[in-house]
Image (cartoon, rainbow, N blue to C red; front, side):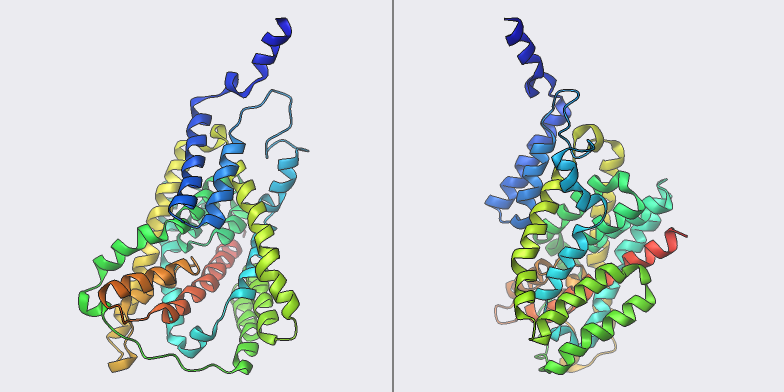
Length: 377
């Protein structure tokens, strides 16, 4: 009986707190959204299960959590805490991204740039609420709706906020189909949603090969802090477009990025222990992240409306396309297509929306580089 009684004290049931139970419920909700609603299942499923794993209490002295030096989970989490996984994710994204729609209509790049206003306005708001400049920079990047970039920057500027920022960034990426449509309808009229854009021109293979090299040099010279993310993104794209490293490009956009996504999602979820995650500061970060994402969406739409004041005829832009300026590739572009076809089933905006969508990926990485360069001085 003494042995049995001692065993009972070592079970997770005896040491479970209400916070652990709540986080486990949140993890199960993430898993349910991934399976039932198909909301970013490649992200929410590993993150959700990681949340469940990370909130199982353990006996004092057992090295099990991501925060225990020498534990298995801590080694997996090193890729997050040291910013290793995000550049590897960018390599795979580059290998699967087609920049031809952006190259065929370069003015749509401005929509991707305009959407980054959410990052900088949230940075100012976080400063106003009492966060340090470094913490504010890490929180602001959530507005780009780019999980890897948010993890990369927060690991450098505010590692103690990494768990909350990562979960917030990926949560809002997954909820793009829920958050963006109401904002899109609120800021556009029916006539604007019915605008049909002219078909993009055909882009030559030479342009596709030259672009990643030139774009990297420009981005790196403007924001040296973005070299790692931008470099991996354009390296992956060059492997794809050169047509001489198809095996490497195929590995990068399939097996490689899948492996890294599993490790990143699971370890980020496992880092959300209730004792460190359920704090007023974390809740405030979630609120600021939501505001940041909404402002970024609105910024792209409103800038498209502004551009239309100077464009004529078939050169006009459907303002819905501006919502794709955030970095949630390709979900934002799909949402633009969905909302556009609700107004006119024969209006195909997907390819046009991919231009600001991929530009948003570049823009958020450059914004992260700028914040890093400025805030570490």
